[in-house]
Length: 299
Image (cartoon, rainbow, N blue to C red):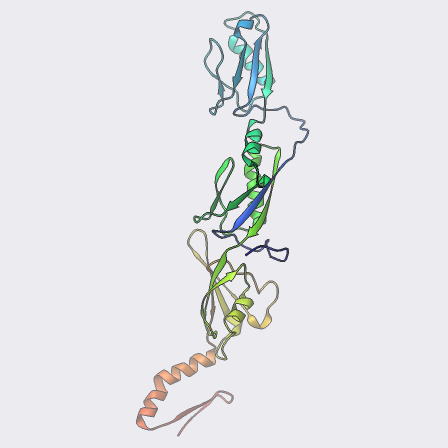
């Protein structure tokens, strides 16, 4: 089902097969903090009085760089000044008063890599992603991100949190484009119990209406809703059909079960039918239940 402006995206829990659009927005900002080297950044290491040692190096995935005549040095997370001080100290046992200059040649390599990955012809700076059968999604630089059961705003917040730990100049907007069927179940005192594959989210009252409404024997004050949590535990709650409002008529999640119980009077009548009426009829007696007066008559 295509998602329109009236679709309650903020309430809908994502399910496998749902289609999302991720819009990547570059958001470069002036920072008061000095830039810290990241993996794949490139820098020039220049020795003023020993040009034969000059090198252009790139930060490896392990955060190290290779320099001449010395062991590899860890530089990821350091500023250019910190790297200069570190190398000056390292070479001081071999060179007299070494004068070293560090220049960052290429930076934000992760951001460039991401921009290249999302610059697809059909959608520009966006990606169309389908929630996998295992409930996760795969994004550039984030290969495995759980998405099933959470809302689009929650997913947007988590995606931006993940990317902020990798780079600080990217903001992601998440849009829900299509939803698959939302399978829910209803049982008990309704006219048409069973599973219902609805197009998108549905509330308790809407599902009961879809199931043909409640029977006269239903107890509307204690309708039970059972949900399965991500860790496998079951979470149950009740709602009152007699006093429905926006809070009590909550939206159902995928695979939720709604159970409408029998009323006390209906349960008593069934017990009488199963335990007394059949015996009396077998012996030629008749039994009547006056529910209004609370009396039982035997003839």
